[in-house]
Length: 214
Ligand SMILES: CC(C)(COP(=O)(O)OP(=O)(O)OC[C@H]1O[C@@H](n2cnc3c(N)ncnc32)[C@H](O)[C@@H]1OP(=O)(O)O)[C@@H](O)C(=O)NCCC(=O)NCCS
Image (tube, rainbow, N blue to C red; front, side, top):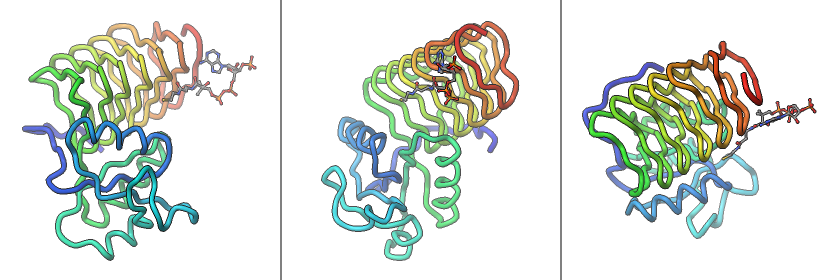
């Protein structure tokens, strides 16, 4: 998925369907409350999450079941941490004609010329700096900094405390574990992983899986 320049952020127009009724979903529900975003309920495929409530919100069944019962414009946000799973779920929701919405905590600071695509999550206290670009369905968790002109690919994920320096480039699905650091101008290829607490002093090729200092 390529990065499309968005003229403005894409908060949900109506109540938001959260996809993924587990820990991250609970956390993003909390951030929705902080951001004043109304939530319609959760979709989940798990057999034991098809009816009743989760975190006080209705369980709506699978994406396809909710789409069959819903009417009008439905906005969604995928609250699933696994990058590949988030990609598959986003594709299913898009195939149902749903619209991806950003969830951005009000304490986050985004430069006016930063570009944040639909479906992105930005947690508490994060900073996205000047001319940075964040592609659809990326996760920028709590207390993360994304440096100037850095680029995050679709379905990328920055765990809490990550530092992505200026002019870095992350491919699709790249993952940085908590408190990992990417030095200025370094790149990470598609679906590469930098482990929690690691420091990348050189580029990571696509699919690389590294820990400690590399
Ligand atoms: C990098 C990571 C993905 C590796 O997962 P994995 O492929 O399952 O690797 P394993 O757990 O099998 O560990 C393989 C080896 O690397 C070591 N290792 C794993 N993660 C490490 C890390 N972050 N730093 C240093 N060493 C690490 C393990 O101790 C093990 O060492 P050994 O071979 O000497 O026994 C994972 O450990 C990690 O850091 N994930 C980030 C999680 C995170 O921050 N989550 C936040 C959620 S919000």
